[in-house]
Length: 182
Image (tube, rainbow, N blue to C red):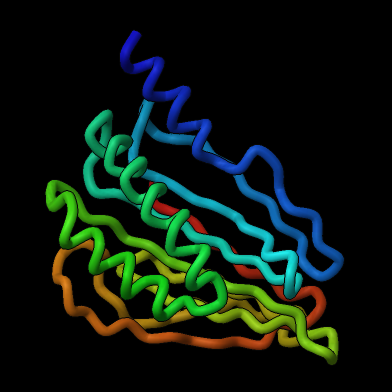
């Protein structure tokens, strides 16, 4: 019963609906390997400037302890998103500091991506990666696939980590894939 309750609570952390945008098409699939685990994500629409923040992380370990750690991460990311939704670098640096100061039983890989529309109808993707698998980028113009490489170690190991902010201009038809290994 406790495992089933943890599963329901963890699924409740996922977005209930996907924000509708005139310049982004967003979709996700959640299919955990175990009953409960450490994958977590959110998609936030910042209506004031019609931008979107997507955070994805994968907690070390599996089972109930990893799921509990995701609740800790959710509490922190909800607060940080109000302050740094448009600044992935500050967002991830503060998240790392809070994770290392709080519960040190786990660590997680993560990526925060911020999408904003430009005047010329392109989209700027601004992101910071923390040990998470590289995003996959498909360029419609070049008909090519590449990894969006960016340095960064996992969150929750060391309090003073410097992450790297990367930017990419996306054009109509381009695609970006975020995923976890779970």
